[in-house]
Length: 156
Image: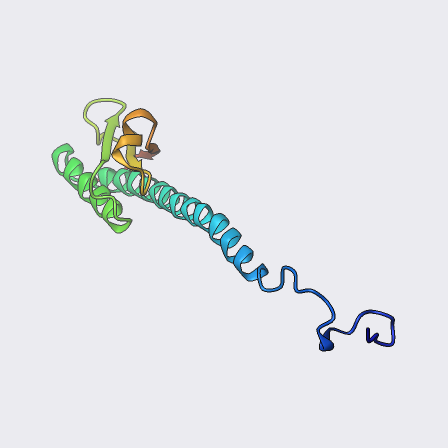
């Protein structure tokens, strides 16, 4: 048997038996896919939930701001609904989004009044089949509340 300078067998002459050569790529691909698929699903799910969080926060804040700048209660409610609808649509939540506007007294737009707007979204988790959705929770509820003050010296 030929030996190299360090005493190890010389592979160039074919003196050793071939073992697991070439199987590392198969194992790497298998484990990579096995780990990559759940990680990808986790990233997609967290991104969707984060988008809903941003959307609810923006919708609640903008609805409150739009409400307190209205001329009367009816116009203010329309402005708040439009502002929330735009905020929800910007993040792709046209369905399942709600807005509730509450006032601390009557009329809503009296000087130093407080308006509370709450935006809520029901986020359905991606790629969850209906069979699983019937027995396990397949959605996450996201809500955001914003408190806006009506100006003291506003002319209405």
